[in-house]
Image (cartoon, rainbow, N blue to C red; front, side, top):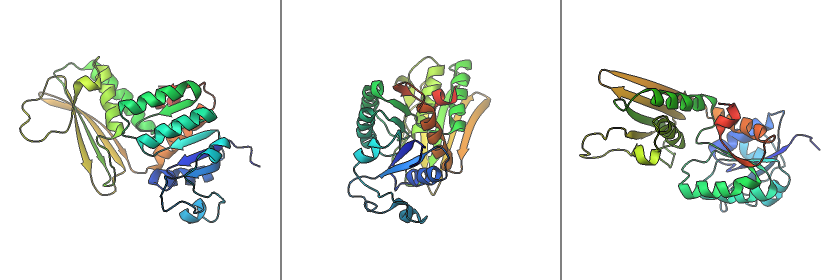
Length: 269
């Protein structure tokens, strides 16, 4: 029996799920104790190792998280907003560290996570990479330093299969810019433009989304004024950076008290 803490991967058949499983299998810190998929997935009933082509693991992919959660200390969750809310309730009951990398969360989903947080460590972020979180803090600081003569645009690009826009990372960057200006993203946000939109509203934060090919993730925060532009950029070329960040967050969460955290907490930023 391994003395390493058990960890569960939800959305195991997805790109992030497969990457997480491979990193966990190679890790000195974790023992894989569960692989969860949605009901009706063609992956159900398969051995995770055989599905990945790495040989039999003895980990059968299932849509029932309860047995796995009972053996685990943490769960890493890159699924859908509705699924993440359901996993949060179960993780809270089992007192697990719940790392949520799911994007597209609406205010009601965040409220549901808040309700679970008094009973479990919940670490949720629109992006788990170190570089992106540094970019987020820089965005806040630059927005704080520049006045409303500087327009702010967030431009993001992802692969053709991504279903939500703007990306969770783009919204995280927009929120940081809004905080730097002493406002909220809800008040400042301008969605993608189409047709005759009129002149830009001073102080607004604009968003543009590009979808195509196999782009892992690119984010630009553009500060533009008359005569000059400042561009902060992050380019991801390997989605393993997000998986490594999520596992770092899970490890950090083992030593924390129940509550709601993000990657800024994990990284001490």
